[in-house]
Amino acid sequence: MNNDIPVFAEQRGDRLHSSVPQVVTAAKALAGQTGGKVIGLVVGATAGAADALDKTGVDQIVTVADASLANYNALRYRSALAGAISQLQPRVVLLPATFMGRDLAPRVAARLKLGCATDVIGLGIGGNGGLDVKRPVYNGKAFCHVTFPTGKTAIASVRPNTFPASTGPGGAPRSAIAFTASPGDDRATTREIAKTGGAVKDVTEADIIVSGGRAMKAEENFKIIYELAAELDAAVGASRAACDAGYQPHTRQVGLTGKTVTPKLYVACGVSGAIQHLAGMRGSKVIVAINTDPEAPMVKVADYAIIDDLFKVVPLLTQEVRKLKAH
Image 1 (cartoon, rainbow, N blue to C red):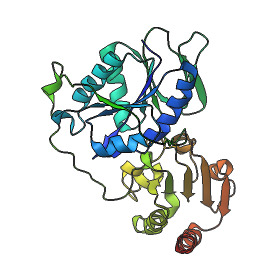
Image 2 (image 1 turned 90 degrees about the horizontal axis):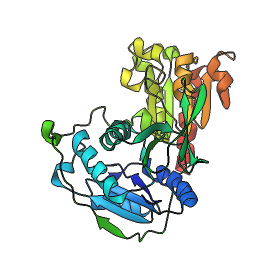
Image 3 (image 1 turned 90 degrees about the vertical axis):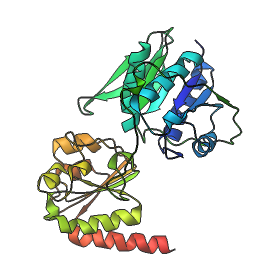
Image 4 (image 1 turned 45 degrees about the horizontal axis):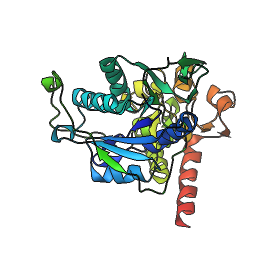
């Protein structure tokens, strides 16, 4: 085993996922402690994703390419990543905690009989020389440290938007690892991936989220939320109350029973801030609350609060954003 830190470079349609440069930042900090290299590991390798990865400042790029890896397939990607880890013998492997990363990390760990920690927000080398990670538990009310033993590769997925994106000069050397399918990989075949939901971003992968609550009163009133989101290049979210009322699909629900998000900016419009909702967005870097109730829980946790009618404030915000963009 060596001191290198491979980063699974998730790519979709030849485009590097936005969370990968953030994970590279975490890997660089770890590599500074271990003295190893940061390796960008591209599965289903494509030139565009590899070129984008090179701009994050990784020390080396390793690709695993095969026609059967063109679309994400849990079993084949598991075998590809597990095979690469077996050859590289690294100290730590990091993945982004995206839908794909959360699906893939435990599968690879189980295949290689390695330890795995998910959704981590802090990483370092512990006193025993093994990886030590910090991860939230009990819906973010507490944190725990997970320490891995030495002598075995540690696998961890990193929560998006926890670290800043890494940049670098490029020019990293490249190499390839042959893909070997494992028995059982053909039990399921991904023939086509069809995107649904139009052009609106998913809340789990957005840097900015504009959410609406029960105070939106009707589905058609979400039009003002979508208009502000479009100007901010943001995703549209909703509280459980809004989704249960049919104002928005549950795919946009933020909260304990919905999706956990960690955007750089979270704008809550008419969201009171029930405990389950706060648990799903507490990790947001900046929170803005628009509410008529100054005692609402969301107002109390917000960095900025506008105590006024959202139907007046949101359109005004949209106008101001347009003016700023015009300049």
